[in-house]
Length: 499
RNA sequence: GGACGGGUAGCUCAGGUGGUAGAGCAUCGGACUUUUAAUCCGGUGGCCGCGGGUUCGAGUCCCGCCCCGUUCACCA
Image (cartoon, rainbow, N blue to C red; front, side):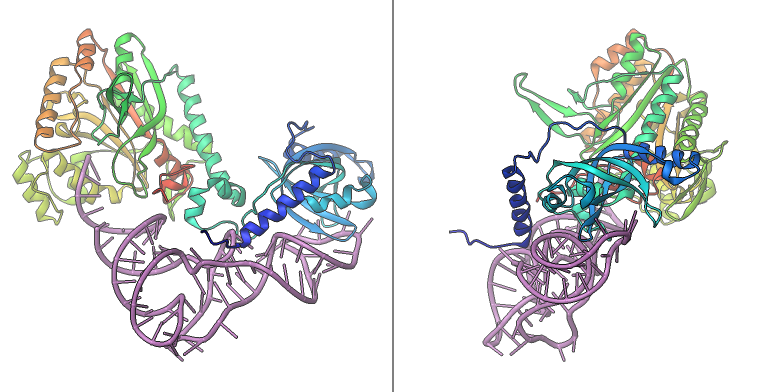
């Protein structure tokens, strides 16, 4: 036997359901199919302001509008009432006056609730307190809302509810919608930038028979009719490069990657990457293009190249600083890891400056650890680090004249790693050796070491033109451009534990 | 996984040393025909995250668990 307990939330819902049946009993439909608006609220406001400028006498202004939106506030004054109506772009006040409405319409306002979608027509005017207002002649309920919205003044601040019920967050907190609007503008600016430069946007598989293109643990799933395990992709890289083999010269993809790793303020298990590949280009040329892309997007989204991130001012004007990785380590950590390419000596050197080095770390990962601990914390203003040790980058081409290095760079802004790029390895013999080295690391227990992809090697044997490739973490860039401390603030529905 | 902070009405939050659970907003009733965090009067609304324990008595003390956040570690 379940005990019946009355929560007040249920009472609030019951109350709205009663209004709903009351509306139906008058023959009205509380969930309409369609509503013809004359304009958006923002457009109506603009039209009114324009008319105001032209008219000598406010009495001459006649701006009619039929508007729709969600009712977010209601102030009743006896025989008149005010409400706020919000559509996607703007808000306008509604003014209901008993005399100006048809019989019974004013009384029927009683069946409306905050959160209802309403359509209203009338003429626009300005109240004596200066608020642009629609003087309503007729209105109709478009959708009944059955649950109460968060409070109007404080909004919704409970972080968990904000993430789990993002729709409430978006309704209650206007700045949240602005933040996502900025992310949307950013992605759109990137598309335009690349499309204008002759890049083709393509789509490659999300389900991979062999996970590749990055060092990360994949999610595993199973295809039933093929009776075959599949992996959610950790990167599109190997497929995009197959397209270069096939004759595409400039391609990019903006899509989701999935990595089965820990989640924190900069990692979500599924995240969005831009990857692009350009034939006949190398990493130095791509560095210029990357800088141009970033600055153009920042300029377009923010209208400036100066930005504030977590209390620090960042100057993103070109040119951006470029430092060789080993020079940056010399500068900030005070040790020369380039001079000691041998694993144990490098480990001792790193330990000598207080960086903890695990027994199992190889040379490449030692360099990576020192970089993360001792260099990245200084990288507030945009900085390119380039020329990485070959061990860390099994898909990158070796640097001309320096076989211990690869032609690779990363960009850091606000201490966030924003991208990773390199001259693409297209020598199938070298690539096979690198895969075999990864396989050895896997045998030694490195779950993230890359798999050998025989079909990819076949493609390289057919021949891939010289090329450079770039990957940008879209969510990280969105964090930077929206001054967000957590990646969850720029992902509509971030991953949370099931309740 | 460790440490710290949090979980009380639909929302935002109070609740010294244990003693019948509060406010504002929302909601319901009343007044008000240019208000805007409208105002004024009155009312409803609570498995105090979940489960044990101590106690005459637990929102409060003890133990375990769940969820969220911050941070460290792990992982890259």
